[in-house]
Length: 193
View 1 (tube, rainbow, N blue to C red):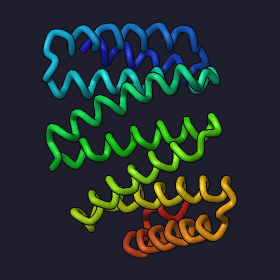
View 2 (cartoon, rainbow, N blue to C red):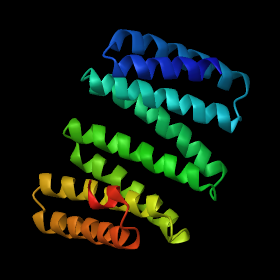
View 3 (cartoon, helix red, strand yellow):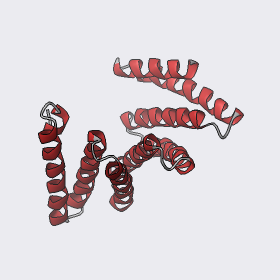
């Protein structure tokens, strides 16, 4: 579709270092996706596509070091993924997308020096990912997501002076990644390669 094509061109231009060209195409994708959702406000595919545009623009504004603008886009992404997850609570992809949106908001809040609300978002991501992981114990991606959540929480605890709490979180990361590495020795991501 046209919006996806604009998004892909934007991504490629961003990788090539053409920030303005990338921004133009991401804005075009956003406009198309907003129009599609306005014409069919309950369409989950339209909501997910618009959330992707918000995500892309949030990342672009982080690259420009405009964190308030990035946060605005990430919060809109989060709102849409909240709606999608609420509409289909058993959809594991919707749950993962919601957790990832919480992580984007949390990471941006960390960059803005707002540790307490960042911690709230990382803890919610952990809750979502642990729920997904417990329902799918063989899902290595879900386990890896849980390890990232513990790492994010550990970072905040360390930054706020709770070194004991941070060490506990990082030990959980090590435990999960050792478990993943042992269950699949080819899993270079779990080993940190």
